[in-house]
Image (cartoon, rainbow, N blue to C red):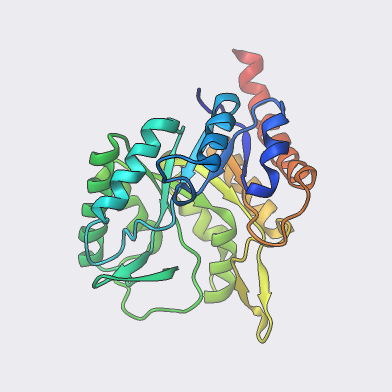
Length: 282
């Protein structure tokens, strides 16, 4: 089962039953593999049932690709077992670290973009791809503080990772908007430079304002509807690059399933308008 160029939803347990019953054309789902990397049990059986009806993508949060060591071997084995079982259309991870010197942290943490970091992350991506026997996609992070130690431009760094390892890229449009607002650069200029040919999937999500700093500090909270500015950036990207499989993410203040499906329908309509000329000439 494969994903054509349509829009999916990040799947949460509250929506399991609705997702299982839904027959919308082209619908697919994305889950965090860490919630399913077990030998058995009801949640894994439920994911099997979803996978039998819809394509599934795995979006990891704990490989710590920018950490100081290779991905944890036991964790990677469990991810490989789940990947073999589910046969996801895509496996993706974050460009961040969450483990260092054997200590684990419950967050996706930033790093200075140096050549040393590039070598380390490329090694970790290659290690992961070799074990999974497939390429993975790497997501651009959201930023909150300016780091003085960067020696690489972010877009160039991501493009170089893709070139060196053969990985693809996951473009999170909300992360682009949040980072641009927080660090004071133009989101559309950053986006226009992004290597579209390497983008395997796009993410759309909502964000929130920091309680103390307001609009001066946006938080990639995934707990609100997609903002108009993010929709505009998404349209700009797909009009330049062409349609890409697109995911609607929501992790907090979870609304009813049909509310997320309405956002999904909006993105899907934008994709279909771009696809219509191609379909007519086929």
